[in-house]
Length: 89
Image 1 (tube, rainbow, N blue to C red):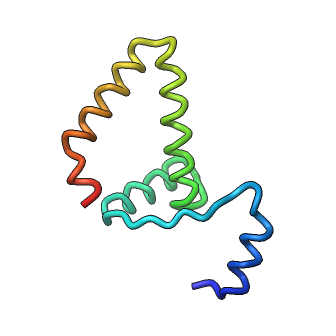
Image 2 (cartoon, one colour):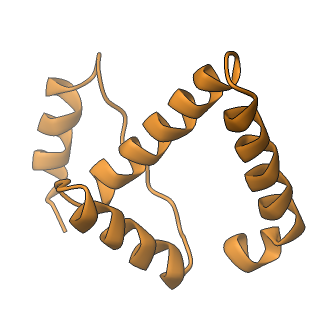
C-alpha cells in the first residue's frame, strides 16, 4: 500500500487529468481484466478497465451507422441486465 505522502503527490501531480477509482469486484471480474490485459498487451487491470470503456464507447458510436453493432449492444445489455446478480453481488 502506498504511503499517504506518495498518494498525495500522485493526486497533486494528476489532479487535472486523473481520478483514482477503487471498486470492489467479484474475483471473476478480476480474472477477465487480467485476461484483457494479457490478450491486448495492456499494462494491467487499470488499463484493461480503460480499454473496456473505450470498446463500449466505440461500439456505441459504431451503432449509429451499423445495425449489427446496435444489435450487439442490445444483446449484451439485455444479457447483462438479465444476469446482473452474477456480476455485482
